[in-house]
Each structure stands twice: as structure tokens, then as C-alpha cells.
Length: 371
Image 1 (cartoon, helix red, strand yellow):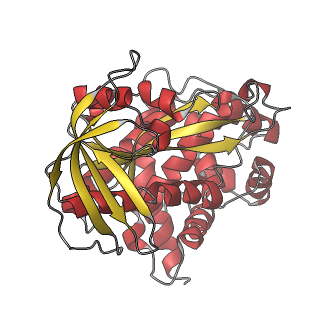
Image 2 (spheres, one colour):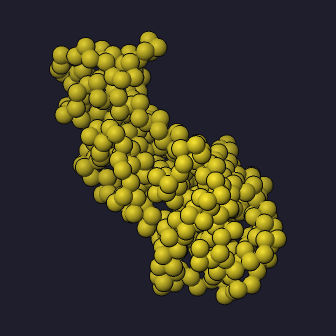
């Protein structure tokens, strides 16, 4: 393993250094804390996530006790723990947003798509995950009966496993309302996989008007009328699902004056290998029914993505208690996730992703700055 160490450091620095420096040249993003430049702050936070450090205090202690560590990160002199903590709570996020956007753009160009690329080529999952916060330390995050915390709304490109868009909302904003706030222009021509929390005829109508297709489970109480039926194939999905019916429906009730009636939607019913029946509504009439059912299985990939961010990269432990600190945590964790994705080809098959992240962090701290 020892011969790999210098190469790990060089690879990580080649990827991040030009992007960190370029972002700092953007007017206005680096004007903060004269003796603690945003470039050094970015490196410290990236290492904090890579090393899976349980707290900024421990990360600071490691840097302070390792000779030359601050210098290798671009600091002529060390910084105090309080300065690191204050900066991580209040530093404007624009710089980190630029770095993340640049990494996403790089990944779109270079990451090899999923083997199911024909099916997943322009499909994204839209879902959210809850980040718990302290009601005492973050009182702004508690509203009424809702627990203290925020929700990270995410659009994940299935073909390349990339986050395309991110939004942070309070828990008082449910998923249905959150989807109404998305700018759908960037989704035109895509298919979104959504779950029941986002559903509804009005929501579907808004997506269709924007040129966005959808696949969603049908709400058990949703009113609809069958207008046509299609023959179904006996072909099963690789996951063992059998298509039971494939019908054209009109969704919604004309008797509800506040509702929306959508004609010519498609309703596909299936039974999985456990004998559980499911129903999916979509406007995709070009795909075979079993492909619609297959797409529903891919929706769980975003749950794995959230688990990776929260349990392996520390999204559950924000850098501070303010809204700015939580959003900064999201950005840095996503930056590290993109780094690991872009360097995945260099990871030895015998090393887990979390161990690889730890190794990248250690080699960057130990290797000379020019190494």
C-alpha cells in the first residue's frame, strides 16, 4: 500500500487545486477573513469529510499537531479552532457552490454511464432526506409539530449517479410543495421518478406542461377512469416482476372543482417476486410496460446515495448550527462525493469507498504541498 500513497495525493491535488484556485478568482467570493483565505478553508473542510472526523475540534487538533500541515494547505500560519468554527458557520457559500458546479460539469463529461444507459439516459430521481438538528441550538429549524431539522431535496441523474440539482427546505415544507418550487426548465426532455409524496394531478400537469415526463406510484385513493387497454407481454423484469395490466386512463375527477383532470395517462400494474402488487402512473407511452416497472426499482438508488452522504461522509453532523453552516456542510459533502466518483477508477478493488476516502485525506496531509 505504501507505494500508492504519493500517487493518491497527486491525483487528488490535480483534480481539486485548479478548481479551488479558479473559484477564488470569481469576484466577491473570497472577500472574507483576511488571514484565513477561502481556498485554505475549502481544503480543510474537504479533508474533514475525507477523514470522517467526528468534529471540527478533532480535525483542528490533527492539523495543529502535525508539523507543516497548515502550510501544506496554503496557510502561512495556523488558525485557531474558534476561527475555523466561525468561518464554517458564517462564510458565504458562493465559493463552494462554484467548486461543486465545476466538479459536476467535469463528471458529466467524463464519468462512464450506467450499463443500463439506454433506459436511464435521461432519467432522474427526485426525492428528499431529513437532516436532524438540535431544537435548542438551531431553533430556526423547528416549526410547530415538526421535528427540528431540514430536508435536502435532490435530483439525481440515474445514468451517471450525479446530483443535478439541490435545495434545502424546512421540514414544514412537504415534498409536494417543494417540487412546486423547482425550476423545471433544466428538466425539459427528462423523465423524473417520484414517489407518493410528490404526486397529484396538478403536479403531473405542471410537469407535462414543462416537457417533463414522470413515473410515479399511483395513490390508492386517486380517482381515475380506464379508457383503453393494451396487451401485456409475459416477459418479466430482471428483478422478477410480472406485468399484470397496461391501461390508458383519465386521472382525476371532474366533480372536484379544485382538481385537475389529465387524460391519456398510462397505468401499469405489476406483481413483484414477493407477490406484492403495485400500480404506476406515467405519461411515457413509448416504453414497454416491463421497462416502466423496472424504472420503479431504480428509485431506491437515491436512498443508497443519501445513506452514503449521511453515514459515510458525515452529512448528519453539520459544521455548525446556522442555516449557512448546514448548507455549507451539504456543499462540502457533495464536493467530496464528486471527488470520489471522479477518482473511482484509481481505487483498488480491495479497498472500500470509505477506506479510500480516508486514504486520500491522509496522503494529502502527509505528502509535500507540491507532491
